[in-house]
Length: 239
Image (tube, rainbow, N blue to C red):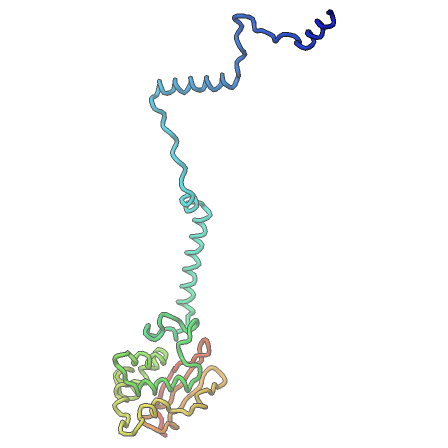
């Protein structure tokens, strides 16, 4: 009987501790802190009314644009841009001063605007005189083969006021009674000669070997960038 009682006591164990009546349960410090902050917030609203919220942060793109490093890079780009144009203005090639209809907005240093052999360049003059195509503005292309001043020299040598007038006058002097006259006048040099590239940077092309008239005289040419050739002087010949 005594053994049974002990076994029951071991199985049941000690009873749970009971809080005496009237004792306050423990308080969480974090809850106390949050409650105090809420009371402070209510007091601020009571004293000052609605509390303004802080302004929203600026967008990222605005912060990037107004940053100091971006402003410095923009200033550097403006300075380099100005230096490039100053260099091009003072040291650029005079042969770039061609009509926009000829260049298409390009320059001799970046675009091939002229022929790559002297005789091909002179052939362009003959070819476009033979066309006399006013509607497609061929005059500007013919006169664009000359550097500044040489086109006026060409005009005066043929008794014309300007290069365009000289082209019209010369077209009127071509013998158009010969079959195939246009092609014959437009191709004054044999094909093999067109590929000849002289040594040096200047050369002279004579018209004395041209079989059909009118002969256009002697052309002095200069090599420029990209192995292009432009006409720098003109004179009449006694062939």
